Amino acid sequence: MKKLLLIATGGTIASKFTESGLAPQLNAEELLSYVPTAREFCTIDTIQPFSLDSTNVNAAHWIQLAGLIEKNYENYDGFVICHGTDTMAFTAAALSYLIQNNRRPVVITGAQKPIDLAITDARSNLLDSLRFASHDKAHGVTIVFGGKVICGTRAKKEFSKSYNAFSSINYPAIASIHDERIIFYIDDKNQCTAPLQFYHNMNERIFLLKLIPGINGKVLDALMDSHDGLMIESFGVGGLPNYGDDSFLKALDKWISSGKLVALATQVTHEGSDMSVYQVGKVIKDRFQVLESYDMTLEASVTKMMWVLGQSREPGKCREMFYKTVNHDLLFL
Ligand code: ASP
Image (cartoon, rainbow, N blue to C red):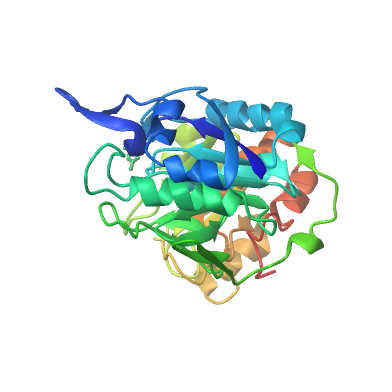
C-alpha cells in the first residue's frame, strides 16, 4: 500500500456555512472521514499547515507547502493537497516551479461544494486524488478535479460554479479517472531523470496589467518603483497600443533599462501569444528585451516570473530560466 500525506489548507471543500458566508472549518482528519474507502488502497497521515479561503493564499504559503513536502519527501510515496479552487491554478503552477523533477506525485484538489453536503463533488474529487496519488505512474504536480488529471502548469479555472471547473490549456489532460479506473493519456514518469530540486524563494513584486482599449502606458510609471517584474496581458497574439504618444514605448524603455523583467502574455485563453505576427508586437520585440508567454497559461507565466525573479535579478539568467520548459509549461519555443 502507498503511504500518502494529506495536506489540508481550507477552501470550499472544508467549508461550512457561517453567518458571514462560507468559510473553512473542517480539518484534514475530518475531511478524510468522508472518504473511508480510501484506507482500502492507501495509508494516510494528515497535516494542516493553514486553513484559508484560497483568496488569501500567497507566495509565502506556496513556499510553506513546498517546504513541508521537502521535509516529508522521503517519508511518503505521494502528497495530496486540499485547497480552495479560486487560486488553485496559481498554487499548482507555483509548486511546479518550486518542486522540480519530482518522481513522486503532488496532487492538488478541492471542490465547488463543501464535503459535508449531501450533494457535492468534494468526496469524489478527494477520493480520485488519493487514488491517483497511489498510482505507480503518477508523478509531478497535478490538479485532480472533476475526473480529470491536469498538469500543474496547465490548469485554469474556467467555470465559477460547475463541477467541471478546471480545463487543461494548450496541453492534453494527463489522465482521466472514472470510478476506480485511471486512464493515462501521458505516461512520462520514466522520462523524469533529472535530479529532484526544491526552490525556496519567490519574488512577489510582480504586476499584472490587463490592457483595455485606450489604456495609457503612463500607468506603468507609477508602478515601476514598487515592482521588479511586469506581465502585460495583451490582446490576441500580442502587441502594445501606440496612440501616437509613444507612452508604452517610453515606459518599457524605463522598466527594461533599469533591469526589470517585462513579459507579454495574452488575454485569449487558448493557443497563446506570437508577437512576431503583427507590427504592433514585432516592433516591440525587435526593439526591447521583452519576454513573451507563448503557450504558457497566465497563472504559469505569473508564478514563473515570481520564481525566476526569486532566484536571480540578472536579465540574461532570468530570460534563460523563463524560457526553460518546466513541468510541460512551454512547448511553443
Ligand atoms: N473561495 C473558495 C476558495 O478558493 C472557493 C473554492 O474553494 O471553491 O477557497
